[in-house]
Length: 220
Length: 365
Image (cartoon, rainbow over the protein chains, first blue to last red):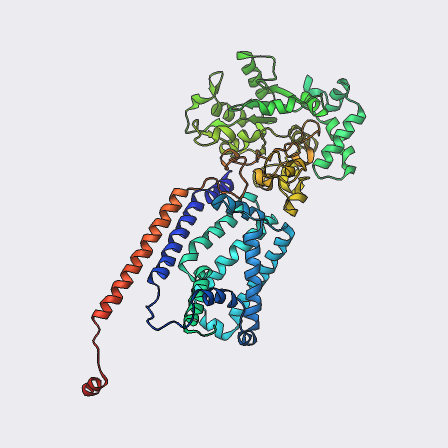
């Protein structure tokens, strides 16, 4: 009788702690490995600073260069749309902010629910579009591995379950909410061990790129 | 003898006006999501209804549910409806006590075998628990329920303890308490949870049974959809503030005074299905959220164990910081070990390197 509630309490309690623990373990292991290994010492005389160009590149690489946009406008545009939508749903939905505040003590103002709802709907459509594009594009389909489909799924699940729970499209509600939290936990668990690490490494890689070019005195 | 009089006759004897009765019927119709045109039909059916026998078993409970039903600040039609229901056995409300009370129960069961409504409030120690944790006249709750169940037409579990186990079942559940539907498998069960349930929900369920002679449509938790079909959150008058992102941060700040949403103060309205927001309490005077208190989620299973009453719904029940820190430390060690391994491999590679010149390569060929 109380099974959906027991499920919700499990995903909100022990499972949540396990997911966070695995996320912390995996992420620290991966990031420490990257940082401690560092790069080969460069004995050449530097022609410019590393920090400035490094940090600038972290930002500038967010915008695709014109050539990339001309070659793959769909990837750039839809990629941007769903990343922004995902971040809005994740970081600006008030219950999520409450959770983050309870975890790390940091809070910020959220967006009104209808805005977050619309962003989520757009993100869902964009994600489905990326999957269709990946499946229909011969080169992309050829390049795609099982991991690519896995991370698409673990990214899509928290969004769709959140949307279903918010609109109460599946019931009972504790089950809907529990499924959403579980999907987010799977995302956290999978993150450190797959391409999803780009959430962190994309910025590290950009910094290294910018820093290398900066040291050589070249524009990046 | 008493059972031969109809409900209508009894209500008239008690001085309930036709107008008051019809108003009650109209309210019942709207509660059951029926068109207002159904009110006369309900009135007619209620008037014709024979006094159904109700046996009310109180197990591991606090009498709050009975209080909710009887302690309305003025006598209401709901009261009277319940009065005219033949409440043949109810610890708190019956005059008889001791052996005589138990005899009344047995007689009522015999007289209305197969027809009576069994109302249970309170959880009961389960089949594997020590039956001595809760007994009445030396009879264990489980035994009494099973005996009464055999001749019951249907079972109504009143209150969260009876419906879901409630407070007695909360961790660590020392008495092995279970809900009614954990025991009853072969009879229809209606759960009317709440701590306590809204009085009119209790009488509404009874009225629906009397009018239509059948059990109401139930949700996944066997709660009548008419009363538990919508979340508190979806009918809350503070909902616009939630959607706009305006929250009371403490119980006495500007937001609290302005009547903003209580989500951040731990309101469980989004996950709670009950009729408080629409029917309200104390004759429609107010209800917890209107009084400035967040909804505790009392009509949901395991609500005592579902995290702090004053913590937001999305916040985990308990955050195990030590485990997360420990896992992070293990991660750091794993990362360090991976680095050490890679470094050693690189160094070994450097040592095992055999420099070769172009001339040497050409000679080898």
